[in-house]
Image (cartoon, rainbow, N blue to C red):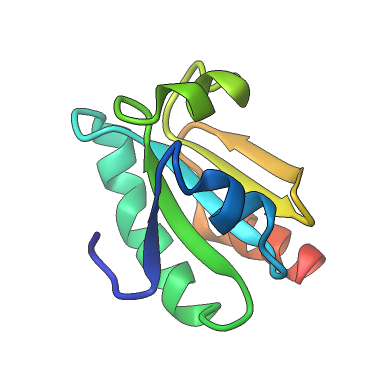
Length: 109
């Protein structure tokens, strides 16, 4: 992970880290080979730093976490889902700009 504020989510820790979190969680569904995912990474890093302590930010590799990717119907990456109280609050598919993600976090935090 590029930032100390970004967590790595897996099939094994998703329930505890995301669904049971007491703060909103921004999850970046990505894969190593995905160029748009790599383009989005600096934005995710920035948001993680700016929202540290208020929002949990992490990435989940869709190639390694197949069960979670299937459960949330990830058919295109990058996909960013913001969870609040264990529920999907906002979902963005494709390369998304920082302003849209920032606005979504402001609505939920």
